Image (cartoon, rainbow, N blue to C red):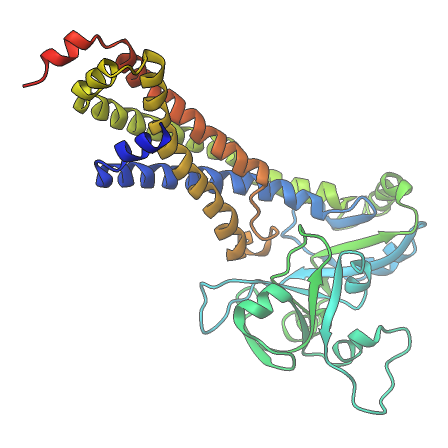
Length: 395
Protein backbone atom coordinates (compact mmCIF):
# COMPACT_ATOMS: atom_id res chain seq x y z
CA UNK A 1 0.00 0.00 0.00
CA UNK A 2 2.79 2.42 0.87
CA UNK A 3 4.49 1.65 -2.44
CA UNK A 4 1.23 2.50 -4.20
CA UNK A 5 1.06 5.80 -2.29
CA UNK A 6 4.58 6.73 -3.43
CA UNK A 7 3.79 5.81 -7.04
CA UNK A 8 0.69 8.03 -6.96
CA UNK A 9 2.70 10.94 -5.56
CA UNK A 10 5.32 10.50 -8.28
CA UNK A 11 2.74 10.61 -11.03
CA UNK A 12 2.79 14.43 -11.08
CA UNK A 13 6.20 15.19 -9.56
CA UNK A 14 6.11 18.95 -10.17
CA UNK A 15 2.85 19.40 -8.29
CA UNK A 16 4.05 17.13 -5.50
CA UNK A 17 7.35 18.98 -5.16
CA UNK A 18 5.69 22.42 -5.17
CA UNK A 19 3.22 21.34 -2.50
CA UNK A 20 6.04 19.81 -0.47
CA UNK A 21 8.07 23.02 -0.82
CA UNK A 22 5.14 25.18 0.30
CA UNK A 23 4.64 23.05 3.41
CA UNK A 24 8.39 23.13 4.10
CA UNK A 25 8.50 26.92 3.85
CA UNK A 26 5.39 27.35 5.98
CA UNK A 27 6.68 25.13 8.79
CA UNK A 28 10.11 26.77 8.58
CA UNK A 29 8.51 30.18 9.10
CA UNK A 30 6.28 28.86 11.86
CA UNK A 31 9.22 27.36 13.78
CA UNK A 32 11.37 30.43 13.12
CA UNK A 33 8.72 32.74 14.56
CA UNK A 34 8.22 30.39 17.49
CA UNK A 35 12.01 30.40 17.90
CA UNK A 36 11.86 34.11 18.68
CA UNK A 37 9.52 33.31 21.57
CA UNK A 38 11.83 30.47 22.65
CA UNK A 39 14.77 32.90 22.62
CA UNK A 40 12.87 35.43 24.73
CA UNK A 41 12.20 32.70 27.28
CA UNK A 42 15.82 31.59 27.11
CA UNK A 43 17.03 35.14 27.76
CA UNK A 44 15.24 35.17 31.10
CA UNK A 45 17.23 32.08 32.12
CA UNK A 46 20.45 34.06 31.69
CA UNK A 47 19.55 36.07 34.74
CA UNK A 48 20.41 34.80 38.18
CA UNK A 49 18.61 35.20 41.46
CA UNK A 50 22.04 35.47 43.14
CA UNK A 51 22.89 38.72 41.34
CA UNK A 52 21.22 42.12 41.44
CA UNK A 53 21.15 44.80 38.75
CA UNK A 54 20.98 48.46 39.66
CA UNK A 55 20.02 50.98 36.98
CA UNK A 56 18.63 54.48 36.64
CA UNK A 57 15.04 54.48 37.91
CA UNK A 58 13.80 56.63 35.01
CA UNK A 59 15.06 54.43 32.19
CA UNK A 60 17.78 52.02 31.23
CA UNK A 61 19.14 54.49 28.69
CA UNK A 62 20.02 57.07 31.35
CA UNK A 63 23.35 56.62 33.20
CA UNK A 64 24.27 56.83 36.87
CA UNK A 65 27.28 58.42 38.58
CA UNK A 66 30.32 56.23 39.04
CA UNK A 67 30.46 57.48 42.63
CA UNK A 68 27.53 55.18 43.44
CA UNK A 69 29.89 52.23 43.27
CA UNK A 70 31.53 52.82 46.67
CA UNK A 71 28.15 53.13 48.36
CA UNK A 72 26.93 49.93 46.71
CA UNK A 73 29.99 48.02 47.87
CA UNK A 74 29.26 49.11 51.43
CA UNK A 75 25.76 47.60 51.43
CA UNK A 76 25.47 44.63 53.77
CA UNK A 77 25.41 41.33 51.87
CA UNK A 78 27.03 42.67 48.68
CA UNK A 79 30.13 40.65 47.87
CA UNK A 80 31.28 42.36 44.68
CA UNK A 81 30.09 45.15 42.37
CA UNK A 82 30.80 45.34 38.63
CA UNK A 83 30.21 47.96 35.95
CA UNK A 84 28.66 47.25 32.56
CA UNK A 85 28.11 49.87 29.86
CA UNK A 86 26.61 49.32 26.40
CA UNK A 87 28.94 50.55 23.64
CA UNK A 88 26.98 50.03 20.43
CA UNK A 89 29.76 50.23 17.83
CA UNK A 90 29.89 48.74 14.34
CA UNK A 91 32.46 47.02 12.18
CA UNK A 92 33.88 49.65 9.76
CA UNK A 93 34.31 46.99 7.06
CA UNK A 94 30.76 45.66 7.41
CA UNK A 95 28.44 47.91 9.47
CA UNK A 96 25.45 45.60 8.98
CA UNK A 97 27.21 42.61 10.52
CA UNK A 98 26.56 43.72 14.08
CA UNK A 99 27.90 42.24 17.32
CA UNK A 100 27.49 43.47 20.87
CA UNK A 101 30.20 45.30 22.80
CA UNK A 102 30.23 46.09 26.51
CA UNK A 103 32.63 48.18 28.55
CA UNK A 104 33.22 46.38 31.86
CA UNK A 105 35.50 46.70 34.85
CA UNK A 106 37.79 44.17 36.54
CA UNK A 107 34.97 42.70 38.67
CA UNK A 108 32.71 41.74 35.76
CA UNK A 109 34.29 38.45 34.69
CA UNK A 110 34.86 37.18 38.27
CA UNK A 111 31.17 37.77 38.99
CA UNK A 112 30.23 35.64 35.96
CA UNK A 113 32.81 32.93 36.62
CA UNK A 114 30.01 30.39 37.15
CA UNK A 115 28.60 31.16 33.69
CA UNK A 116 31.68 31.61 31.49
CA UNK A 117 35.15 30.15 31.20
CA UNK A 118 38.23 31.69 29.60
CA UNK A 119 39.37 29.05 27.12
CA UNK A 120 42.14 31.01 25.35
CA UNK A 121 44.26 33.80 26.74
CA UNK A 122 47.47 35.76 26.14
CA UNK A 123 50.27 35.03 28.57
CA UNK A 124 52.53 37.51 30.32
CA UNK A 125 56.15 37.73 29.14
CA UNK A 126 58.52 35.24 30.72
CA UNK A 127 59.48 36.27 34.23
CA UNK A 128 56.73 38.89 34.62
CA UNK A 129 54.51 37.98 37.59
CA UNK A 130 50.75 38.36 37.44
CA UNK A 131 49.28 41.21 39.51
CA UNK A 132 48.24 40.19 43.00
CA UNK A 133 44.75 38.74 43.22
CA UNK A 134 44.31 38.51 39.44
CA UNK A 135 43.53 35.27 37.62
CA UNK A 136 46.57 34.42 35.43
CA UNK A 137 44.16 33.98 32.51
CA UNK A 138 43.18 37.63 32.86
CA UNK A 139 46.61 39.07 33.71
CA UNK A 140 47.35 40.55 30.27
CA UNK A 141 43.77 41.71 29.86
CA UNK A 142 43.87 43.53 33.19
CA UNK A 143 47.20 45.25 32.53
CA UNK A 144 46.55 46.42 28.95
CA UNK A 145 44.00 49.20 28.52
CA UNK A 146 43.07 48.41 24.91
CA UNK A 147 42.74 44.67 25.57
CA UNK A 148 39.45 42.88 24.98
CA UNK A 149 37.87 39.47 25.51
CA UNK A 150 35.55 38.02 22.85
CA UNK A 151 33.07 35.16 22.77
CA UNK A 152 34.12 31.98 21.03
CA UNK A 153 31.27 32.17 18.49
CA UNK A 154 32.26 35.69 17.51
CA UNK A 155 35.90 34.59 17.28
CA UNK A 156 35.04 31.71 14.93
CA UNK A 157 32.58 33.72 12.85
CA UNK A 158 35.05 36.53 12.19
CA UNK A 159 38.09 34.30 11.85
CA UNK A 160 39.97 36.31 14.47
CA UNK A 161 43.04 35.12 16.31
CA UNK A 162 44.40 35.67 19.78
CA UNK A 163 46.58 38.81 19.83
CA UNK A 164 44.93 40.27 16.74
CA UNK A 165 43.90 43.93 16.66
CA UNK A 166 40.29 44.69 15.73
CA UNK A 167 38.67 48.05 15.08
CA UNK A 168 35.16 49.08 16.11
CA UNK A 169 33.59 52.34 14.94
CA UNK A 170 31.68 54.03 17.72
CA UNK A 171 28.13 55.31 17.28
CA UNK A 172 27.21 56.50 20.75
CA UNK A 173 30.88 57.25 21.38
CA UNK A 174 32.24 58.42 17.99
CA UNK A 175 35.61 57.51 16.54
CA UNK A 176 37.54 54.38 15.67
CA UNK A 177 38.36 52.19 18.66
CA UNK A 178 41.17 49.66 18.34
CA UNK A 179 41.24 46.62 20.61
CA UNK A 180 43.68 43.73 20.99
CA UNK A 181 42.17 40.29 21.61
CA UNK A 182 43.68 38.97 24.84
CA UNK A 183 41.15 36.35 25.78
CA UNK A 184 38.34 34.15 24.49
CA UNK A 185 35.41 33.10 26.65
CA UNK A 186 33.04 30.18 26.29
CA UNK A 187 29.67 29.93 28.00
CA UNK A 188 29.01 27.18 30.50
CA UNK A 189 25.28 27.67 29.93
CA UNK A 190 23.64 27.51 26.52
CA UNK A 191 21.57 30.61 27.27
CA UNK A 192 24.65 32.80 27.79
CA UNK A 193 25.68 34.75 24.69
CA UNK A 194 29.03 33.88 23.09
CA UNK A 195 29.04 36.63 20.45
CA UNK A 196 30.04 39.70 22.47
CA UNK A 197 33.18 41.77 22.91
CA UNK A 198 34.18 42.95 26.39
CA UNK A 199 36.71 45.74 26.96
CA UNK A 200 37.91 48.02 29.75
CA UNK A 201 35.49 50.55 31.16
CA UNK A 202 38.43 52.84 31.93
CA UNK A 203 39.25 52.99 28.21
CA UNK A 204 35.68 54.08 27.45
CA UNK A 205 35.62 56.54 30.34
CA UNK A 206 38.82 58.29 29.31
CA UNK A 207 38.42 58.31 25.54
CA UNK A 208 34.67 58.41 25.08
CA UNK A 209 33.29 60.06 28.22
CA UNK A 210 35.98 62.63 28.92
CA UNK A 211 36.36 61.31 32.45
CA UNK A 212 32.74 62.15 33.33
CA UNK A 213 32.31 58.90 35.25
CA UNK A 214 28.88 57.84 34.02
CA UNK A 215 27.84 54.18 34.34
CA UNK A 216 25.15 52.23 32.48
CA UNK A 217 24.30 49.56 35.05
CA UNK A 218 25.82 48.05 38.17
CA UNK A 219 25.84 44.29 38.68
CA UNK A 220 25.97 43.13 42.30
CA UNK A 221 27.09 39.72 43.46
CA UNK A 222 25.52 38.74 46.78
CA UNK A 223 27.14 36.79 49.56
CA UNK A 224 23.72 35.56 50.68
CA UNK A 225 21.23 35.09 47.81
CA UNK A 226 18.33 34.74 50.25
CA UNK A 227 18.67 38.43 51.07
CA UNK A 228 18.27 39.59 47.47
CA UNK A 229 14.89 41.24 47.99
CA UNK A 230 15.95 42.98 51.21
CA UNK A 231 19.18 44.11 49.58
CA UNK A 232 17.35 45.57 46.58
CA UNK A 233 15.02 47.52 48.86
CA UNK A 234 17.92 48.79 50.94
CA UNK A 235 19.81 50.00 47.87
CA UNK A 236 16.85 51.84 46.35
CA UNK A 237 16.05 53.36 49.73
CA UNK A 238 19.62 54.59 50.04
CA UNK A 239 19.39 56.46 46.72
CA UNK A 240 15.76 57.53 47.07
CA UNK A 241 16.62 61.20 47.52
CA UNK A 242 19.60 61.14 45.17
CA UNK A 243 19.65 62.44 41.63
CA UNK A 244 19.26 60.08 39.91
CA UNK A 245 17.42 57.56 42.06
CA UNK A 246 17.85 53.86 41.32
CA UNK A 247 15.88 50.74 40.59
CA UNK A 248 17.38 47.47 41.82
CA UNK A 249 16.06 44.02 41.00
CA UNK A 250 17.31 40.51 40.54
CA UNK A 251 19.13 39.87 37.30
CA UNK A 252 16.39 37.46 36.27
CA UNK A 253 13.73 40.10 36.87
CA UNK A 254 15.86 42.60 34.94
CA UNK A 255 15.97 40.25 31.96
CA UNK A 256 12.24 39.59 32.20
CA UNK A 257 11.59 43.32 32.26
CA UNK A 258 13.78 43.77 29.22
CA UNK A 259 11.79 41.10 27.39
CA UNK A 260 8.54 42.87 28.33
CA UNK A 261 9.79 45.91 26.38
CA UNK A 262 8.93 43.98 23.22
CA UNK A 263 5.27 44.55 24.06
CA UNK A 264 2.78 42.49 22.08
CA UNK A 265 5.43 40.87 19.92
CA UNK A 266 4.67 37.33 21.21
CA UNK A 267 0.97 37.74 20.37
CA UNK A 268 1.77 39.07 16.89
CA UNK A 269 4.18 36.22 16.21
CA UNK A 270 1.64 33.60 17.28
CA UNK A 271 -1.02 35.25 15.10
CA UNK A 272 1.27 35.30 12.06
CA UNK A 273 2.24 31.68 12.70
CA UNK A 274 -1.39 30.57 12.80
CA UNK A 275 -2.12 32.50 9.61
CA UNK A 276 0.73 30.68 7.87
CA UNK A 277 -0.56 27.30 9.05
CA UNK A 278 -4.11 28.08 7.89
CA UNK A 279 -2.87 29.24 4.48
CA UNK A 280 -0.85 26.10 3.88
CA UNK A 281 -3.84 24.01 5.00
CA UNK A 282 -5.91 25.52 2.18
CA UNK A 283 -3.12 24.91 -0.34
CA UNK A 284 -2.69 21.28 0.67
CA UNK A 285 -6.44 20.65 0.71
CA UNK A 286 -6.86 22.15 -2.75
CA UNK A 287 -4.02 20.00 -4.10
CA UNK A 288 -5.55 16.82 -2.74
CA UNK A 289 -9.00 17.73 -4.10
CA UNK A 290 -7.58 18.26 -7.60
CA UNK A 291 -5.64 15.00 -7.39
CA UNK A 292 -8.74 13.10 -6.32
CA UNK A 293 -10.85 14.45 -9.20
CA UNK A 294 -8.20 13.45 -11.72
CA UNK A 295 -8.20 9.86 -10.42
CA UNK A 296 -11.91 9.19 -10.08
CA UNK A 297 -11.84 6.34 -12.60
CA UNK A 298 -8.81 4.82 -10.88
CA UNK A 299 -10.64 4.65 -7.57
CA UNK A 300 -13.46 2.82 -9.36
CA UNK A 301 -10.99 0.31 -10.80
CA UNK A 302 -9.35 -0.20 -7.38
CA UNK A 303 -12.74 -0.92 -5.83
CA UNK A 304 -13.54 -3.30 -8.67
CA UNK A 305 -10.33 -5.17 -7.91
CA UNK A 306 -11.38 -5.59 -4.29
CA UNK A 307 -9.98 -2.52 -2.48
CA UNK A 308 -12.30 -1.67 0.38
CA UNK A 309 -13.63 1.79 1.16
CA UNK A 310 -11.32 1.89 4.17
CA UNK A 311 -8.28 1.05 2.05
CA UNK A 312 -9.06 3.81 -0.45
CA UNK A 313 -9.68 6.24 2.42
CA UNK A 314 -6.36 5.36 4.04
CA UNK A 315 -4.46 5.65 0.77
CA UNK A 316 -5.68 9.19 0.09
CA UNK A 317 -4.98 10.33 3.68
CA UNK A 318 -1.54 8.70 3.51
CA UNK A 319 -0.69 10.63 0.35
CA UNK A 320 -1.57 13.91 2.05
CA UNK A 321 0.37 12.90 5.17
CA UNK A 322 3.53 12.00 3.23
CA UNK A 323 3.60 15.42 1.59
CA UNK A 324 2.79 17.46 4.69
CA UNK A 325 4.74 15.48 7.27
CA UNK A 326 7.73 15.18 4.95
CA UNK A 327 7.73 18.89 4.16
CA UNK A 328 6.96 19.84 7.75
CA UNK A 329 9.81 17.76 9.13
CA UNK A 330 12.27 19.27 6.66
CA UNK A 331 11.08 22.80 7.45
CA UNK A 332 11.09 22.34 11.23
CA UNK A 333 14.57 20.79 11.29
CA UNK A 334 15.89 23.48 8.92
CA UNK A 335 14.62 26.13 11.33
CA UNK A 336 16.19 24.36 14.31
CA UNK A 337 19.68 23.91 12.91
CA UNK A 338 19.79 26.80 10.44
CA UNK A 339 18.67 29.50 12.86
CA UNK A 340 20.74 28.29 15.79
CA UNK A 341 23.89 28.10 13.66
CA UNK A 342 23.32 31.64 12.36
CA UNK A 343 24.19 33.02 15.80
CA UNK A 344 21.63 35.85 15.47
CA UNK A 345 21.21 37.50 18.88
CA UNK A 346 18.93 40.52 18.51
CA UNK A 347 21.85 42.95 18.25
CA UNK A 348 23.42 41.50 21.37
CA UNK A 349 20.45 42.12 23.66
CA UNK A 350 19.45 38.45 23.73
CA UNK A 351 21.27 35.12 23.62
CA UNK A 352 21.83 33.54 20.23
CA UNK A 353 18.59 32.40 18.63
CA UNK A 354 17.19 29.18 20.05
CA UNK A 355 14.52 26.85 18.70
CA UNK A 356 13.39 24.36 21.32
CA UNK A 357 12.92 20.72 20.34
CA UNK A 358 9.39 21.07 21.68
CA UNK A 359 8.82 23.72 18.97
CA UNK A 360 10.20 21.35 16.32
CA UNK A 361 7.90 18.53 17.46
CA UNK A 362 4.97 20.94 17.59
CA UNK A 363 5.71 21.93 14.01
CA UNK A 364 5.83 18.31 12.89
CA UNK A 365 2.59 17.65 14.77
CA UNK A 366 0.97 20.58 12.98
CA UNK A 367 2.21 19.17 9.67
CA UNK A 368 0.61 15.83 10.55
CA UNK A 369 -2.63 17.61 11.43
CA UNK A 370 -2.54 19.52 8.15
CA UNK A 371 -2.09 16.24 6.29
CA UNK A 372 -5.01 14.64 8.09
CA UNK A 373 -7.36 17.59 7.61
CA UNK A 374 -6.36 18.32 3.99
CA UNK A 375 -6.80 14.67 3.03
CA UNK A 376 -9.98 14.06 5.01
CA UNK A 377 -12.58 15.42 2.57
CA UNK A 378 -10.96 13.95 -0.58
CA UNK A 379 -10.55 10.62 1.25
CA UNK A 380 -14.21 10.58 2.29
CA UNK A 381 -15.32 11.37 -1.23
CA UNK A 382 -13.07 8.68 -2.70
CA UNK A 383 -14.15 6.04 -0.18
CA UNK A 384 -17.89 6.75 -0.71
CA UNK A 385 -17.57 6.80 -4.47
CA UNK A 386 -19.81 4.23 -6.17
CA UNK A 387 -18.14 2.18 -8.89
CA UNK A 388 -20.95 2.77 -11.41
CA UNK A 389 -20.94 6.54 -10.85
CA UNK A 390 -17.19 6.73 -11.19
CA UNK A 391 -17.05 4.69 -14.39
CA UNK A 392 -19.68 6.92 -16.00
CA UNK A 393 -17.10 9.71 -15.99
CA UNK A 394 -14.72 7.68 -18.12
CA UNK A 395 -14.68 8.97 -21.69
